[in-house]
Amino acid sequence: MKFFALLKKEFRECLPWIILAGIVFVVVGVFLLDFQVRVDQWSRQRPSETVPGVLVSYSPLQNMGPLLLTVALSLGIVMGMRHFLPPGFDKTWAFTLHRPVHPWIIATAKFLAAGLGLAVSMGLPWILIYLYAASPGRFLKPVLPAVFWEGCLMIALGFVAYLGAAVSAVRPVRWYTTRIFGAAFGVGVCILCVAGTPLIHAWVLAIVGSCALAAQVLKAVCLGEI
Image (cartoon, rainbow, N blue to C red; front, side, top):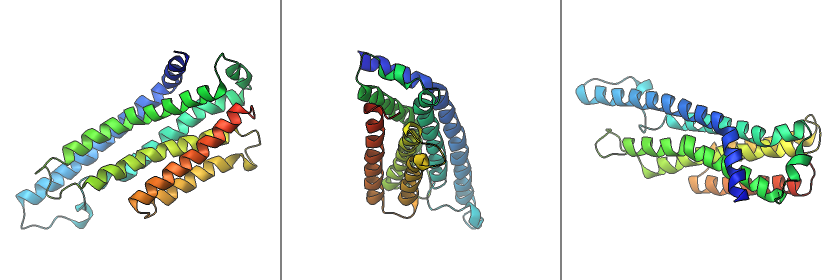
């Protein structure tokens, strides 16, 4: 019960940012999808005319990738700072760690709250958008299943950014020294995942990077290095 109380607290603290990210993604995502619908309708109604090259897309959801990545990374960084930076900044970690639960439980509750935040604000809307776009006959160009997993990867990279921000927040050194390494490592993982890496390799890289960053956070929290 204590764990669920902690989970509820951590989720509630990030709820305004979760809602904001969800609204931004849905509003901009619907706009991009509606734009692609209009382009598709133009192609159907005027098959003899050429649609301008800038409007032609390989996939109806092609423009969703940058949006997913931008919003997911932004939300992940904000949640990481919200969960870990304030206690370290105002020196209240002693009170946090003296709760009647083990420190790793507190950190795990934060991790799960961040994952739920990304799933609720971006995962659910992405599933609905994909199902709409992938309906047979919806668009001239079919939406491949791989596009769904690519979108999920963009959302998962938001969790990598969250852990990178958390590592930088809990390291007991100055910002101008090695404290920035956690965030830099998270950025490096994200860049490698989107830089033409095969999808399965990108997923493996994201998972391995997340485990490495999470281990650093747990180490700092459990050993009282913060």
